[in-house]
Image 1: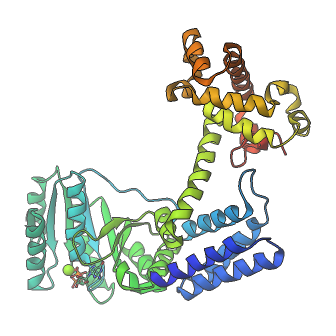
Image 2 (image 1 turned 90 degrees about the horizontal axis):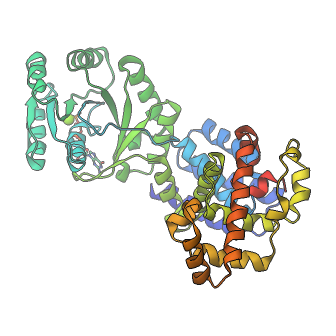
Image 3 (image 1 turned 90 degrees about the vertical axis):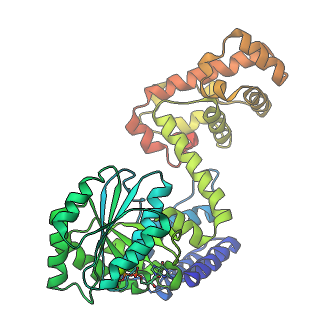
Length: 431
Ligand SMILES: Nc1nc2c(ncn2[C@@H]2O[C@H](COP(=O)(O)OP(=O)(O)OP(=O)(O)O)[C@@H](O)[C@H]2O)c(=O)[nH]1
Ligand SMILES: [Mg+2]
């Protein structure tokens, strides 16, 4: 993965050093991004559709409080997350059966042990089942692994008997290792179907080595068609630069990647979370704080939409609004908002007062900030004292907050969604 990661980090570094984003610079950014991905063996069509998406969105003006540079990096981050699988896919953290499938040497047997260890460390008991009948040594290999992590193992040579045995382990995660073959031929399909019919596993994971790159797409599609897999595990992520291409190929095949194997040791398994993966690719530190910023804004929007305005949000929104001049003028520009009779004088607050309000809010307990309704007179006195303000000033803040909350409730959610872009109230007021 090093190659792709290094290139992407250099690319993000370059964006950070750009001062003005003219059309020429923007084209240059898109070309650089294409180059990074194509060099990492990502499917050409996918790279071009990603660049089209970026091109469409990149010229949009960022929300207030977000710089163009931050906006562009977040945009690229989102698009990368999308081609690498999008939303993290669920795994079952409860007793269930998992059948592992895949061609020769893709890492099924070692994965059985890694998964067993993973579920054990999540507090779930595990049993391993050996269903590789092609080599006499296969069951021995599985037994060794089971011994290493101290879990029971069932010999699946006689499927019906093994199924009976499995009945005794209903409270466990049952992991079934199967035989590999050179290709997904008729015999392999038949064998897997038989196991599937008798054991009825809830999950059927196709195991794919990361070095497959773009070819993973065909393999995932074939397995999906003949065996109806429920997910993919990509192994040997540590051993090749093609991991990114393999993951995007799975996305094209519409096969959800559940885990990544990143080494030969029993602990070398991690859940696949596209967002985390992209964060690592792009470099953690900087990006984390940037994402945090967007996340807080998104959460604010959600709370406002649900009418759960609290004092923290109220204050942040006021700060944003003060940056946008006359609120009355802004409201008048939005169709349908005039009738709401916004208490605009309650929102146009001078710098001095904003400072005082900040002291007041800082003197409240987290509970009070979240739930200002609990602030009755004795608390008001304490807050005024703590913030060095007058009781009237605390009451004024609380009354403005109430007005704003009431006003938010009058706006219908559709209207709200439309105007709350990335989450600052200034957006409702148009700008
Ligand atoms: N570096 C690295 N090696 C791995 C990883 N996963 C598996 N291997 C190695 O790949 C080789 C094959 O692994 P197995 O688990 O035996 O593969 P298999 O699919 O069971 O093979 P067959 O049963 O013969 O089809 C072993 O040498 C493993 O140690 C990984 O994530 N990273
Ligand atoms: Mg094996």
